[in-house]
Length: 487
Image 1 (cartoon, helix red, strand yellow):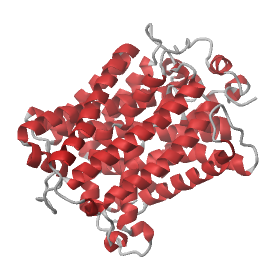
Image 2 (cartoon, rainbow, N blue to C red):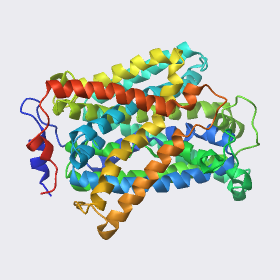
Image 3 (spheres, rainbow, N blue to C red):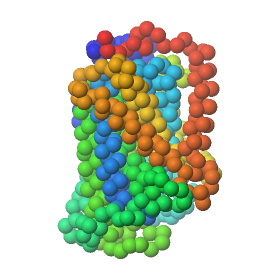
Image 4 (cartoon, one colour):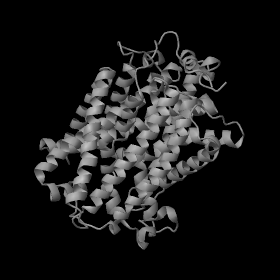
């Protein structure tokens, strides 16, 4: 395995400065934990799962968590071999080459940018309730979302100490809002027995297409929804060159994050389901709000709104930190326009401030689309976008296994590594198809086929952009391509 010091020296150009290794295992874990955000992960899907599947959608969380933990194990092995800034982009680039690695990173950048805008709108809804404003007003939501983006951009550009302080404050709020409230609901306000979550025969009924097969069932829909809850653990690898001893620290951070977030989300979801006062709830009622107001009262719910907003801020901080590092890595490799500007490091903390500002600007411009019919297409693409980006390094790793070229790095599972890679790849491909499945012919066709439309559009745009960069920039060779490869 190549020494990490050599990896950084070979990857950094002479003019961009050097990233500072100031992050530890705990701070890397906190970044990934903030990205996933149990509050955002759960409350973004709880109402959908309850309405479309029923209480048994909880089992979708268990299945999705198990599948994503397999992915986390593979990614932990990949980052231990290639501890480079940019995560999916770097791993794919070194396994299958610059062109396919470019598309992996391009897909990931687009997905994270759209996700940041979507999370900002979700947080704006809770913030509007907290401020006594109309959460249904599009103007109010967009205005507040822009404020949230401005705040997290300030937090990400104010230095690592400020960023760490904000993230740990957010994690404390997450624990109170998820674990604390979950314990309170189970101890004081459990209404339903544990058998309430047992799946019934209707779990395999069609959810709207009238088509036969597993992908049209409620069970498949539950797994598709819950696939959103465990995305972001890979963000620990996006900052690998800022972490001390990344070959060991980053894999541990990924796996600890998945275990912690998975446990919190599953527990919190269970406590909410067992505290549901009645089914179905009133039309238009947010089930989380309904449960909390019913048991805790309006005043306590307003206190919970503070925790919800903080949770959404934490998620946005983690998303922006991750996507800015991928963009910075692209700039360092001269794979995007204005590369010199994108890969510039600023301040005493040597942060990629320009890349961070760009992510804030891109997410802001997406709000212009929130007044059009294009926005639902973007939202429907976000979950599948993660899995499509995941598929690049996983498929590449599987091909290395099948060709006998796979080599374990400092972190591995020994002989189990090869079969684990193949199983994790199968899971990601399954979930990608599951999420993209056109289940609802009654909705506008462009929403039903949003994933295919966005993949086609981003593929064309990305192809044109890459063609331009290949004409203007010499391809990666030598140390730039070999950095991070096992010797």
